[in-house]
Image (cartoon, rainbow, N blue to C red; front, side, top):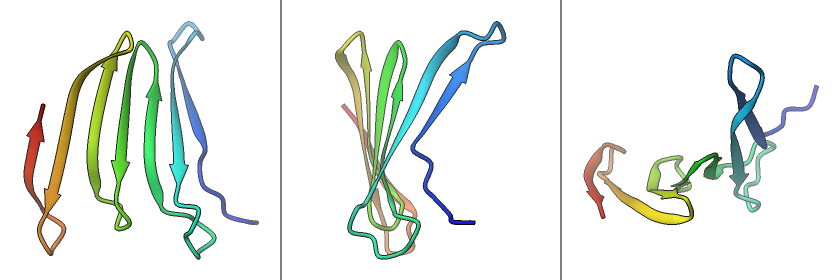
Amino acid sequence: MRKANKLEEDFYTWTGKRNGRLVYTYDEAATTSLKRLTTTMTLSAGRSINTYDADGRQLEWVQYQNGVLRYKRFFKYDREGRVTEQETV
């Protein structure tokens, strides 16, 4: 069986109504069969986008409400991959 990256994921309420979708994008230049995650985007009433570096660390998080940018968060890491700074604007 061939391994593949997840492309999207839907979320439903207990009544069966879809209330959200998570969309994944990957690094096309990756040399392995499983590509590196570069962004995730939540599609619902409030949209959020997460961006990741080549090591899988989150670099940025943005959130929109009704198409308007509400929050933007940046992350910085030390050599061991620990978060050293987080800035929200």
